[in-house]
Length: 258
Image (cartoon, rainbow, N blue to C red; front, side, top):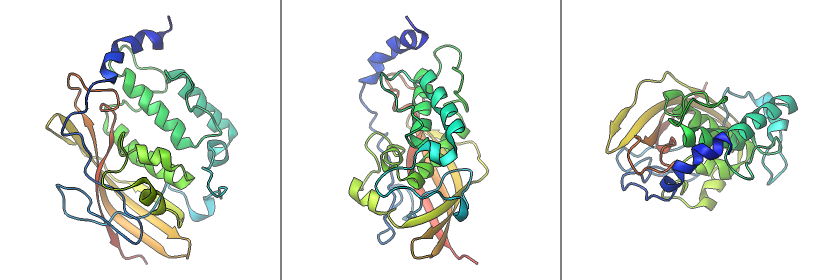
């Protein structure tokens, strides 16, 4: 029996457990023409219709993608680098047919790595490639990086999943996709991370960001603020999905550009 198979057996019972009542998510991204509330427990803030990977892209570095088809990781970062990420993904993923292929977006590959590392966290020595630690502040910030990376690649499925199993709360999938249809290029910068807080069985990690976007018509937009990323705090009965960081809310505001 392989190491992954041995590690997976004690977790199978957890996978079917119910989701805690507090783990519902509190915010959704908004289309450019219809910002919505950021969170039920926070002031209403507009969420920008932007998509960006990290490290930031310049406009000149943005690679065109075929309409309706996500940008492949090989086209994004080069064949050799994409192959290395896919190899790490295959090493840690317990899936029978994992999405660890350089033809998929880098965000999809990295999302599967994060999912797998969270699944096996605390069950023996960390597997090679499971950095940063799944429960760390850096892993929380990586959710935001994957979110914008996915959006920038046109991989809305992976972007949607960064909000949790059911996607962005309070928004349809069609509205979510439409909100990013006219973004030409973006850049996101993660600010200084400070320790998060706990409550009601969850950990909440603020991730400060600055986002610059250029729309199809050449309009330049800048937003500052933060996302709150959350995960269940290793409580008994928590599923592997609940132990993963996911976006809970966003508090962002548009600022003047020069």
